[in-house]
Length: 400
Image 1 (cartoon, rainbow, N blue to C red):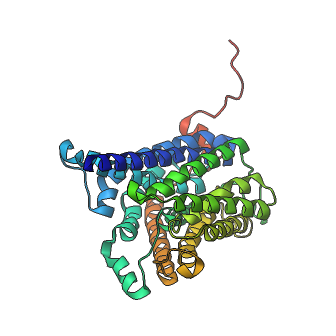
Image 2 (image 1 turned 135 degrees about the horizontal axis):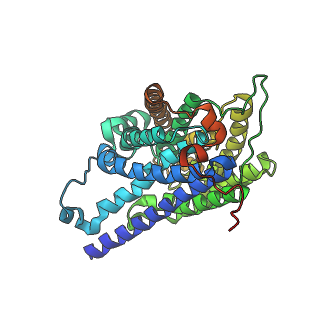
Image 3 (image 1 turned 90 degrees about the vertical axis):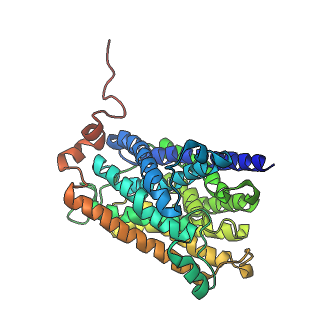
């Protein structure tokens, strides 16, 4: 019976890992559809290589830093309990690798390739697992302190803060250090439109992410006996709320509409296991409206060229999700309780702080040593030809 339980848990979390792995193709297609045609190949290659580098960094450094577990033992020991610890690593790796995938969307079209891979290694090996261990493994006594002083531990069931807010604020640091794409803003204060190169690919990426997100959230239970239908329905309600709010606030803009479900799903991660579905709907709706408003402000008023809007989508909607869990997760709001607003606010601010400091250190040091931005000629030519020596489609068909 114990072997059956272990095998069931392995299958359960393995399916979750596969679903979240598939989400990385969603990140790739979302970026491909949003960037200009001359940077489409780079979007695909960058996300794939980021995942490979993340795997190495998390296997040898990150997972041990977060959970105190390393895999430098015999295969027989690793295979105990049907290899549950190994597939748990696989599942949590797909979360860790989402951080550079998030950052990638903000710095698209003008970032150097190899320095970004180095940044990925540092972020996944050191910065991300530092806060992951605090939130999910009670490292450094922070959770115990919050429980004693704020009435509860910081609750982030599936990563609104640990993954999304951290990734979004890291992305903002990288975007600010890179600067805007050349020609995006004029000296006179004007804005040059850089429309998405492919709405169908953008939509495909959003759909893949939305479907995979149910593995991201539901499988965060990590064992089959802790699975909850509440998480699935709350994710569904938040996704729907995000779509409707983005549709209204974005005035039918397809880019906003397809980012709406992502905003809602980012926000519901933290409290998906404790909220009432109506609270989840409200959380997603606020996130959808927040994304549209802050994306517009960031691009047009503040002149911050965050290409995919990773700071408003992940950084701000993720932060809202962490705080929302401390509102709609309360028993008085129909939730299951076990959270306090103060603990959620403190944990959210701590995650943002770690991301800001980590982003400044990683991208600041890389900028000073090897540089992180393509030179003007390479950027004008496009990252596809400058880095990969091939475009997404040939300029003309060969005539044989």
